[in-house]
Length: 430
Ligand SMILES: *Cc1c(COP(=O)(O)O)cnc(C)c1O
Image 1: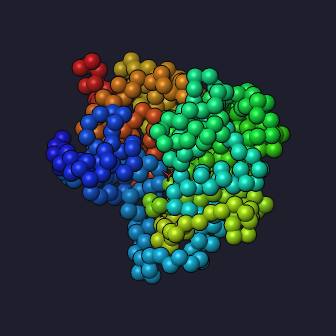
Image 2: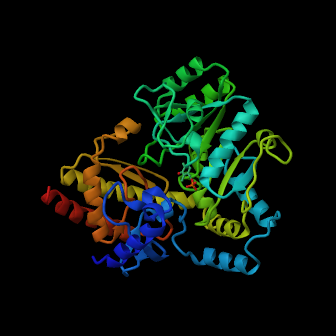
């Protein structure tokens, strides 16, 4: 497959953009090689600058649940653009999208919009700190909550030690207030509360983790978090930026029947435009300015074009959507598991709603330590072999595959056949 255009584009980008990308994962560092520069997308397919087509399982890292350039979304965007792209005033579009979210997400009575998932989680933690009057919060190893300082803390080898920053530029003081524990380890959360009595404002969690590959909670884990936070006067924050309107119309909380105090959203609710949101009970949310004392603001927050894309996207979705998409996701992982088994590759697969995950490691994978056992070198070779066969999985073992309304059974079956072919090539030259 000729990718000279992408190579030239990457070289040009690197001269004026650090590393040639505006979000780190896009650079293909985890799999090697040159990132593919995309010129356009339609339905389930991307087309690169060289004219190659790829079946897309990344979907802009989650947002494009309707598929690319869905006619309803494009119409809504065109209409919105003709009415002006930003006013810096309240609009009725914001209320409309807020009403849809409040109706869908069980724990949310009021919601505030911002422009990214990163803003949503940063604001949710500030609100939890303001509401409780406490500074510390608990975060799980391998969960990703965007690129704000308090979340860029790696775990030490011991689960309950205070974190050290995993990026230069994160102050030690910030890191000290982030307590890192392993995912699916309720005992570690209990111990964190015992060691920091009256100091922990919140526990933030991706209730289904999509950012270390796809890792699901063990039975009882989310209920334990609910009980522990309630008993210790802390708030429970579900970061559903990825899972909201992705695993179920009402997110993980609707699927699992565990209600957090605060929920963060993004990705799907923006339909491919920059949107984030955070919501919860009126009691907590009313602590935000202008009525309360926890500040929040944004020049483009609730931008009318972004609201239009979100509204058009959510209107395409219903409970039935997720039954359909989960069937496709299951067909994908079952097909892949069969291929991996036939080729003798250790693997673990899982699906939830429109999310599908596979690790090149024996499963089940329940935490970051388990995920890290995966054969990332094999994943890198498999990724490139699939790319050469016109299938675009995430350029890292520690990400999730997404399905959209534009994916069909025929595309899933073609993917499985391509995986078989790709693996035979990859294993032959080992
Ligand atoms: C993508 C993601 C974020 C960050 O959202 P951005 O819009 O990239 O800032 C936060 N939390 C989770 C769970 C995510 O998947």
